[in-house]
Image 1 (tube, rainbow, N blue to C red):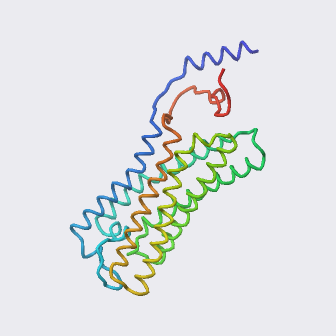
Image 2 (cartoon, helix red, strand yellow):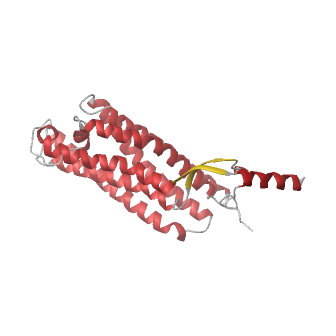
Image 3 (cartoon, helix red, strand yellow):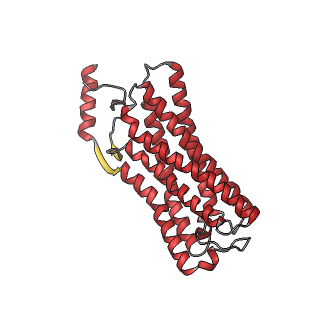
Length: 273
């Protein structure tokens, strides 16, 4: 029986063919590059050619920094932004699923049960908040503030809240996974970077709320510009946080192959003799 199984494995290895291979790291970088580059192009072109349109506010007070909604809600910039998000969204779902599966597999099965339960809870919570964040991003992209401001505003709030919750859950989950393996050292660099980006996002979110209220209620000069500046910092910190996933997958690849025997692949917690 064992000889027969060994023979079949040898046959599969001989017939194993890779049709296509794509670096996971490159996929992540390309996924983040789409909205990042589109945002830069939208900002520069809108600022140069459509300054009057992007600086207009309900208070009609002086400001110099347009909001992201303003530069991506006018034509033709809105088309570039929507196309970039269309290319961005699909890989985001795949990357989220791969990241969750990876970290769940990193949990040491010999760790205390309560620690494993906590790790799985935070990793799953991070996954679902990431999906909500991605869905909200779709919403604020395809329903602009000029088309339907009340809906756009609620989707923006959903995006902000889910983004912060995802960051917190991701950091908590990674820390607990490291505890199950008694190996905080290997994740220290990534956790420090993620914690820094979370702190930047939290501080910027507080500033964003304060300046928004100052603009809406008091109509102070430059309040909207400070709100918009906080918005850009949050967007960049969000992109940077998501790109930290490449620290977990520096050499992995997406593979389309024939006769790939998945059951024989080594799991992360298994040792290879």
